[in-house]
Length: 155
Image (cartoon, rainbow, N blue to C red; front, side, top):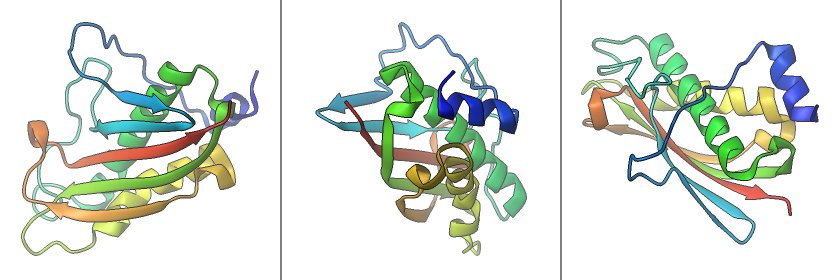
């Protein structure tokens, strides 16, 4: 088993497995050694949103943190689907986290920490990344959070 696979097992993390066929959506594009991952939502294996609403109104900061963490699980699953072996991840370059925010909510970075903390737990230093965490008026399906990523892949 790979080093990253062992780490996932120790953390008790099971990656979601989704059937992405026939959706017309491209979850990621690999160009040279860079994997560009489309925005991932906090959805279950059937593609249904788990966290819906605005953080700071219907959802708490902790709910938002967990939503961002679920986005992270979906990002990791997408990486695995596209490159097969998670140990091929060289490092995370940049992520963009959008938080469906109530008008007076301004703690988007603390929400996106749910994603960032998970990447470091799973990938160690390779999971550290530059990032932007911003508020959004609304997100697809009313989701609380959306995260996209750029990841460098080893050959």
